Amino acid sequence: MIVLRCFRTDRVNFAIRNYVEHFMKKEFIENRPVILKDIFDESKNSEPIIFVLSAGVDPTAAIKKQADERGLVLEPLSMGKG
Image (tube, rainbow, N blue to C red; front, side, top):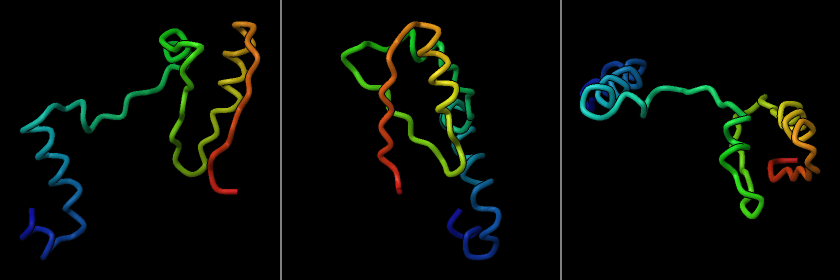
């Protein structure tokens, strides 16, 4: 991979993914969809749920919907930029 980085930097991500898939578990490189219902079912009222999001992603509507279905009061707190 080091030699590949010297000559083909555009292929390094692909090489890393192949390495992880071959020598480790495939679950480390797969993106699994987030099912908010399961997150709420596994959570406790004494522990916060923290979402780490990429730019342009806003799950607020889906979270509010889950809270409304359960009759819960939602207190969102944005810790991001702005």
